[in-house]
Length: 357
Ligand SMILES: C[S@@+](CC[C@H](N)C(=O)[O-])C[C@H]1O[C@@H](n2cnc3c(N)ncnc32)[C@H](O)[C@@H]1O
Ligand SMILES: [Zn+2]
Image (tube, rainbow, N blue to C red):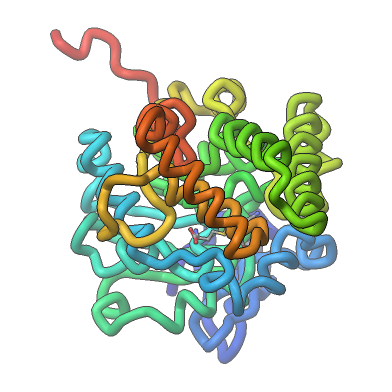
C-alpha cells in the first residue's frame, strides 16, 4: 500500500486501491483512479472552483502542435541545466517530483532515468487531460522504473513535509494565479537541502518583443488585422505586468499566462516562502529542435514568437529580415540580456556556515 499525505485529514496515511478509487486508511475519504492507476489528488472543494485546470483541459489535444514544440526542447533544457549548474548532479539518485508536467515535454527526458538518475519520479499535473497524453507516451522502461503519475494541484500536494529532494517544472508557475502560495507548498514538501528548478518566461525578453512589435507597427506593412493582433498582445502583456506589480493576483485568474517574472520579483517571493536563495541560469536556447544550427538564434526566436501571434507568411518575411539584422549586430547579446527561457533555481537551505572547517 502506498503512503501519501491525505488532502482531507492531512495525515500521512496508507492508501488502499480498490477498483477505481484509492482510499485513505485514516479518514476513509477516497480519490478517483484514472486508468486504474493514476490517482486524482484533487479535493471536492478544489474541483468545484477548479479554474486552474480548465484551460489546459481544453487545450490538451492541440497543445504540442499549437506551440510547435517537442521533447527535444525538454532534453536541451535539461542538458543545459546539468551543464550550467553542477550542483544539480548531487540530486541524482533521489526523489524527484515533476510539477505541471503537461503532455510530457520534460518527462520524456527525465523518465528513462538516463540523462538524470532518480530513485523515484513523480510526474504530476492539475489537468487530467494533459497528464493522460503524457502517460500514454510512457515507455516500457519507464514503467519498470519508479515512475508514478498523478493529477494534483501544486497548491495542495499529497506529500509529507520534507519528503522530496528536487521539484522540477517547466512553464508552470506563471499559470498559477496565487503562485506565492505554490512556492510555500513546494518549500513545505522539499527536504531541508532540497531544490526547486523552474523554467519560466522572463519579463525582460517579452519587453524586448513588445519593443519589436512597436517597430513593426511603425513600419506600416501589416494588415489591419495583424496590427490589431499585435496591439491586443501588447495590451494583454502590459495588463498582466501591471496587475502583477500591483499585487492584484485575483485579477489574473482568468488569463492563461498570468505572469512574466523577473529575477527580483521571484526572489522576493521565494525568500518569504521558505527558500533561502534563488539563482538563475539562462538556457540560451531555441524553442524547437536543439539540432538546428547555433547561428540566427534571435531571428528564430522572434519569428517563432510573431508566428504564434498569428502574423502571415508575408509579414514573417519582414520579421525574418529584421531578425537577421539583429543577429548580425546585437542578437547574441539580446539573448544573454533578455533570456526568454530562464531556469530559476530555488534553494531551500542556507549554505552551511563554516563548511570549510
Ligand atoms: C504551459 S504547460 C507546460 C507543460 C509542460 N511542462 C511543458 O513544458 O510542455 C503548463 C502546465 O501546467 C499545468 N498547471 C497549471 N496550473 C497548475 C497547478 N495549479 N498545479 C499543477 N499544474 C498546473 C497545466 O495543466 C499545464 O499542463
Ligand atoms: Zn485521510
